[in-house]
Amino acid sequence: MKYRFTNRTGGNSTGAFAYLNLGTHVGDDLGAVQSNRELLTQEFGPIQFMSQVHGNRVAVIESFTDVDPTCDALVTGIPGISLAVQVADCIPLLLHSPQSIAAVHVGRKGLLNDVTLSALEIMRAMGADQITAIIGPSICGTCYEVSEEIYREVVAQHPEARSETKSGTPALDLSAALCKVLEGEGLTVINEGRCTVEDSELFSYRRDGATGRQAGIICL
Image 1 (cartoon, rainbow, N blue to C red):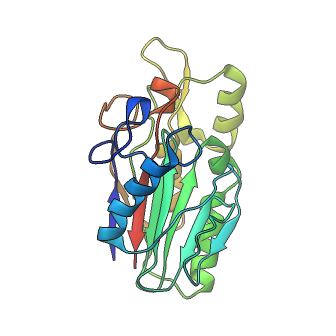
Image 2 (tube, rainbow, N blue to C red):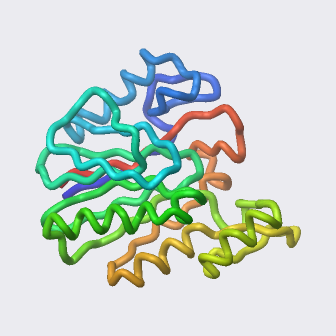
């Protein structure tokens, strides 16, 4: 198993998308995005991306396809197929076991609709045990300011998400809430702990508006 969380450096995109933008849906030149993705295939081989929609659908990948499935989690038990999740503030969650791997897109909506549990259910049905979770860079609990309504909705289901900004306004710590979910499922959890808003080497929609996407990539 190998994995990587990309950042902005090393690609061919320019302007707001400089440099290693991997998102085809953000307004960047598609030729530049394709060349950026091809740079990563040199390290990972074929990389399966997905069209993410903040849902909880999981796609099981048995062979690589150029058509990105519409879902928010990918699972495979096939060695040599890499899985990718794109983000610019949401959590890129990578799961691995000796039998299978998963790449999961966990934002606020994904946390509420249990996309992680859906992915774990499929991995376990495929025989996975000794699953390790790796939480990649995402917006931190101090930077993710939300309305009082959204705050109450999320905290009611995930109290560990409770946070506030430096000025004392409501905020959410999605990473803390996700850690609680994963630990409750008996997983070993590794948290990268970097904040996309605070780290200029990372793309952040909350910080910049129009921007690119980095990715978490994993291969069995």
